[in-house]
Image (cartoon, rainbow, N blue to C red; front, side, top):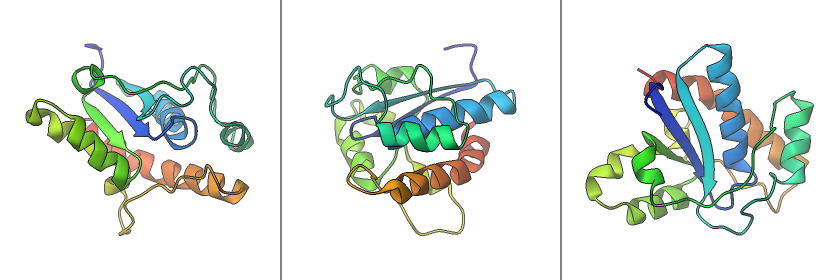
Length: 157
């Protein structure tokens, strides 16, 4: 990934709802702004490894014209801590789990909380829509879309 200025890995639980939306929005943002950024996503757990994003995620993103082609769920690997500049947790529990997994401890500075980059909010989590309704999937999309410019501005130097 040496020709990229930054590499970002978005991480949630199963990599079928929140982190794929963040990955797709990041890819769209960096393409539109011609930024040298590599984006990917993963889940803490391999429940859905090899599967497409949740059908409700796909439906919501399609309604917004967001390209989800090629996105397939995968489990976080130990090598991800070395291969990516930043591992971006979609909520506080994922953030905490990533911090317990990282070794050596010097790599902890790579772990960031997604909503940390959002101004004018005290919220720390992108809510998991898995057991929710279509409006919960829309909320995930809107949060990710709103935060993406600020996140890229902060991390891509």
